Image (tube, rainbow, N blue to C red; front, side, top):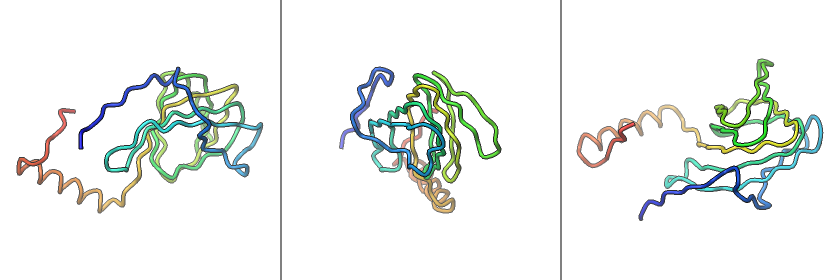
Length: 146
């Protein structure tokens, strides 16, 4: 199966009515409305990239996957589990590990790119890395230059 390279301009990308709603029990203030567009899923179905947008409001968020976020428009104030608040604006990056929680305060609107990755039981992940290394040593797999 051929590999396809996907490119997008997330700031200008038209989002449909797809949404990952903020659960009503998580909302602390306002009426945040979200829109989401799934751009691509990895070949192994362990990762996907989405564009997500949210209107003004304050809410809790619980992460069930590892999530890397890059804000492309607007701003959000994120408070971690220790009560430390951090502003994220265009160009800022954050990592939210699976199992963590945070509070998001969106003053007007925020748009982000999210890279979501399924977490793997650590012994299984180590075994997978060893397997891939053995394939490379046998000349079957290829190693990334990064």
